[in-house]
Image (cartoon, rainbow, N blue to C red; front, top):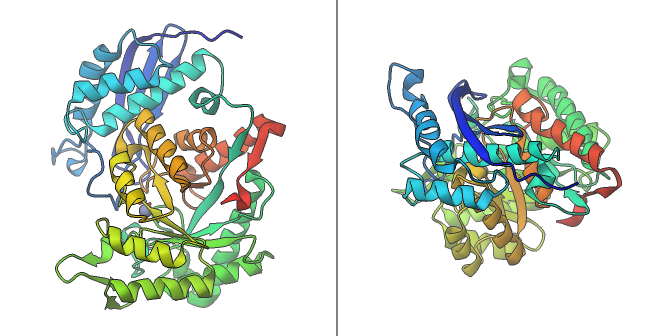
Length: 426
Ligand code: PGA
Ligand code: ZN
């Protein structure tokens, strides 16, 4: 089957809603042979150095969060700028948009405008060739599907409770396939619902932004205990379903005092490192994301040295999927793992560069959603194409989260014997 060099004829865009009811950019790249559509997500606990998400600021629409400017940038600036380029030529398309923008953080056209087109072009190419998105992203004989990192308890800025830690994850590494891991995760999620009702009453099963439960708790350990009980209640052991957290600790760090407000008190860096270490020993945490604030390279390096032999210390806000920041992290041995978010950097090819750099450094890779998501399952293909160790895409509930998990199951089915599962490979 020869591939078709489908060229971009036009680019359309519109406002759509994300899972929090905020507007987001959806783009459509049209070629003579195909159409590719994609929409972009939006974070709540954003890294300071993320590429810029362009919002209108017009208080009369969507509380100022409209994205009409970004939409107009797609149709009036980007569209004419990429017309005639081959949809499959991701790097060229991205470079063209980056130079049209001309700023280091995509603040002129907006990362939301640029990324939507970057993703939609890959899809237009896949559709023109009648291939799945993952193989359009990267052609391989066999693919490794990621371990789902499911966020089953929500805290921090994603929930209305007093948990400082933003996310409590289950990671079914003992599964034989990704599909089985998703089933195991869904079972634990439902056992957790029972555990929370019996311990705290029905108020505890309201959910947060990523579909995890948001019980009215204030202590980190209480959340982890409930998750652990849910794992054993489901008939699994702690080797098969591991635990992880995303502290997103910039959200509870006070730059003036240098202290972290957590569990009803406050801790300095040393004390917080000891706290994580105790949690690791007690709950066998496999992953610890953003344990310190986004500029604390030395504190990251210290905890990685202490816990890195058996746990993955993941950098999210500290790196913002930016190769420059990641190189600093590699040099300072700040982490042994990275979170990858397309919209932190704002194009598909730059995201690929970050993944390749992480691989060279021997870091564990987690391709991730945002807390504000759309139904677009792009990251399921991204994680598969690049052999990500984990995929982080919320609870096994709520449509914008299950869109990704369900897509992974379809991908695994399509691949058949060409599918591997990352499992305990980490
Ligand atoms: P965000 O959170 O999408 O709200 O930034 C996700 C994360 O911190 O990993
Ligand atoms: Zn994070």
